[in-house]
Image 1 (cartoon, rainbow, N blue to C red):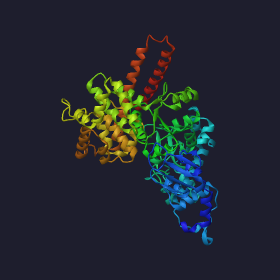
Image 2 (cartoon, one colour; image 1 turned 180 degrees about the horizontal axis):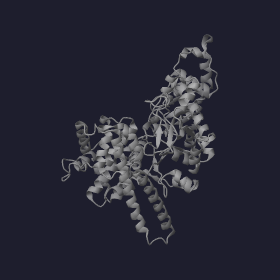
Image 3 (cartoon, rainbow, N blue to C red; image 1 turned 90 degrees about the horizontal axis):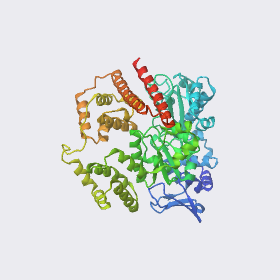
Image 4 (tube, rainbow, N blue to C red; image 1 turned 180 degrees about the vertical axis):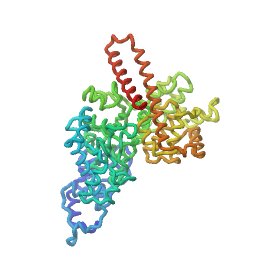
Length: 600
């Protein structure tokens, strides 16, 4: 309890804790005379009203009126209690903690469970790292990562590792070090159903660090074995020391660079983030196996003037980009989009083209408004009244998210020019957008007052309904399929809904319905569940459905590639076409191999 820590220790912490140094870990500050100023971390603002006064060792926000000293600031930012804040600051400023009445810290009745698990994860991260670099078993994983262009310096920096194939080894080893079964079983390192079995095995390991560089969780990449039975990535669930929605991968490495450059890159995953850092673009971070959250944006809001988004260009990536743009704009942060050319991700650009090319892609990032207008131009027919209306309705939420009238007015003008419509007409529809939306939904010929297309219940859609009846199988499905693997538009929508619910941690029937805006799909789901249509399906039957979906998608991709190869015949005098042909042939070869493996 806090009374055990001596008043002298508290006074020492207060006097030695440099308030500017403490606050600067969370907020970008600028010096103005005797005070430092920045945007408040406790509420959204564009103009700095948050002040730090060093000679009084205090902070105060003139906007939301939050104020106090270093200890209170750490308590609020870290959501911890007074004794925990004292220990954190004592460690940062090298203050020895002393106790009243010759009290021994061993007698102190505090809940240090969080610190014990952090210590465990740091030890395990060291073990995995050793397994990658120093053991014969980890050699294949080391070969894989180095062939992807990752240097030994980067491997050391990110403390990449290898988890042993023997799933019982980790538990036996940790118990030999006097860790109890009860403690280990709650650590997240072992299977809930089979607690002697490690959750991660025979995988390339990515330790996830908190903002202070302590290992708090893991991600593990599948490298060998039956790819159809193992998800590509396994990630730690939320733990006492780790909340995935409040953590960013590599933020501990990136925060100083974000502060210096006043910008941050949000990218897709571990490898993309590592590629950016190795190329010297060390202000990149990544969400952790879930959609970007408001809390993750708040982590960087105090440092960054601009957010750059670097997500995949597939359907799921475009949806994530649209959503992230709105979230960032709602928090008052300008956004740019990095569009990669001649490669599917930053890691591939780093390997094939080098750091300079990746840097150029970042420097050529486009404004979010330009990205959205280009994206919507491909999605809707701008030469029809209905296409123009739907285009505008999907762009209006972006305008809503902008913070100033000047931004809104400029974006409305841009939309008008893009659609070749007068600013007056665009403004009128924007100001009456809810009525316009309702009129569009009730337009003649749309049937039953909705513009939603008819739900097609085919084999693709039924496979998703089957997974909904056994949601344990969705992890396998989402590890092997993406939105683009579905041909049926209704199935594509339902898969996106299931994925969104899965990422949020709630794949229940109620959650799926609440995320669904399509009345027809809602009806089909409800009918299927009410009739118990798939309740007798075995896990094997559901997995067979997933196999079938993947095979169908591969066949469609193969057909498309064959058509592209045919179109290039007779045009191979150009070097660019020769290169394209070689890539297409290699893609077809890989698809043929996957199809053949599935046919065995």
